[in-house]
Length: 256
Picture 1 (cartoon, rainbow, N blue to C red):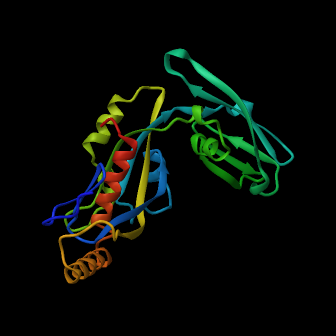
Picture 2: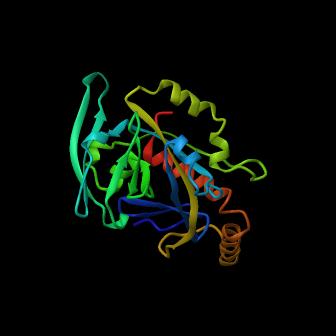
């Protein structure tokens, strides 16, 4: 067994451990929460805010529609047929059911206009009990994953030089997004996921079996510097956004 000599390498049997700079090493865990998801035109009409969203994900999904003539209501249940656009292969149809218990007291009436991708469910007297998109409804009731594939094609961050922009502001005039729209097939739709950083955690590692070049005092200074940087004002809105974006890109590997 070779002992550590003159600061660079410790050999143990056939293995070798390279001496690191500091005894303490750190990793950062960034949580990106999807606050808003949907088609651009639906998000524009949403009362929810995207003010704190600095990461955006552009995806594409099959175009879905609910045939309004297929909708029927029974006690605590709605039955309907969903059409999945398959492009040159035509359409695929599936009959599904969902509970209406959370809609209150009926009777209910289903209303939708061509291309039948949005709907309203009204109570007697015209009061709206529920409204939204067919895709969102089908996602909630657990449509099989193969019918709702969500391909990620682009991921970016929207943080201006002075921190004045969020993801929604960036997407209003985004050349790459416009190109994605232009290249989209008729049987597909562009979906946006707007994300915000909700948590940043600093993880430390201390390995007594791995030697370091810095002294204990220098290592203590290093710990304080890292902790102060992560806890500093603006870190979660700047560096953490960049880390979150990079992690998402590495995970999804978008084609653009």
